[in-house]
Image (cartoon, rainbow, N blue to C red; front, side, top):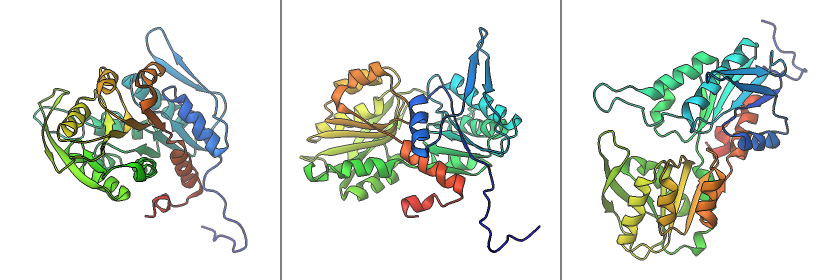
Length: 331
């Protein structure tokens, strides 16, 4: 090895940033590209009549630092396979480094064997992303922290709760004795951090999931919400069964205005119908998963969508330049 010349600027380990977008979240990818000041690289994603996919790059990525933005929401298997095929295409074209940017990682709830004869599918997804060709990954607010351990490649697991809590902090002076409520005890730690950022009280909802059924049974409220404005927080809303129980429970216990704050808007049917019937003042979420226009219209003015593009863009820039990501969060 030759020592670095003392008067020479160190050269980048990788080439230029090449940013690719899958078909699952094109608007978010365009926002990230704008933040970085780069153009999205060209590619064709071809769906054949037999439902097979093919990806073709418009130009070479040999020696480049490549980032693929693809969320793995519905249709889950189409979006996941598209991500895997794109990663392999980039690997076969000799990209220097490939980072899978997956705002929402599918199968996050399948993170352990909590009953006999079931898979740990989150581990399988992590293995497939690595085998397909990813050198690194970036994702947002995993359902369970241990999923990080399923990856053998390095990655950045980011949280949007700084962004969400800052948004609610701007309303702090208008909130009456705010109480942060977590929809279940498993989310208590993140809920406590959220409450601390707002200088708010905490309450918890104890619930029990019934076997493999999607629905849960809310059991009791731990804490006081009488006469208070409540902020119900969660990592994702799927069918909205849990948050429906949570909102109804805090209202039964005398809550005033209720805000719903969550990261990933999965919004499987009948989530939107349930949310529109709830006595909510505002619904705050992110664009980690694109919400269809029709669902946005149904939720109306109550819906606020915060963009994660500045967060992803800044992390991509820091990863490319070899700078600390933890500094963004004072870590």
